[in-house]
Length: 235
Image 1 (tube, rainbow, N blue to C red):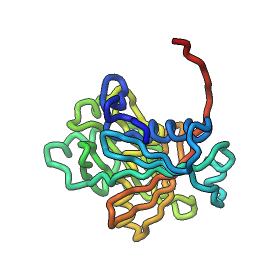
Image 2: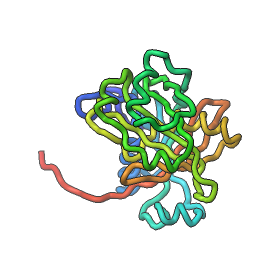
Image 3: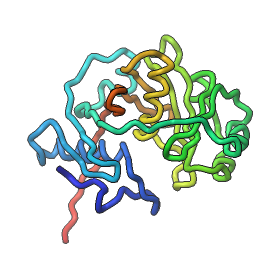
């Protein structure tokens, strides 16, 4: 059991998080690749409870996945997170959204239990191309804005998303694990499937394999991490 936030919370720009996919994936990758653990499963103590990271075997990917991440070194890691519920958004919160999206058509507007706007637009292509007004996002209530749309039929993906939260000091998350904990139940219901392949359409981009355990209200996220730097600290 490793402590990843119960006594030492995950912090970005002085903001405390109770769930962070990036930190959990990176910590698990380091523990697995460094040989610090000899098990295929790691449990982390966090502000969201016990989160599990599991080393899983490589699986055959579509040609799209290979372009995105198939040749990436390292192992696939599966993270087990709680579902983030979504509900109808409040009328006073909705009024700011059209300015944020520069008039882009909106299919649905909801909110997550973490206070984020959850906006569905007609297509994943529009999600990729959207240029949000970050100053308007700063004026909107809530933490940030998740924007999502269905992927093109021949893309190899089920849905596309982006997550913007300039209030926390970062305009856009490259690939947001906690956002996918809200996206999973939404798209599972819409598409009638529990296993999904998602594309995070930030400038860097990323692929997430998603599984919804509806009975236990858990979301499994599979991804990869890469070690890009090593160093030593003498104390």
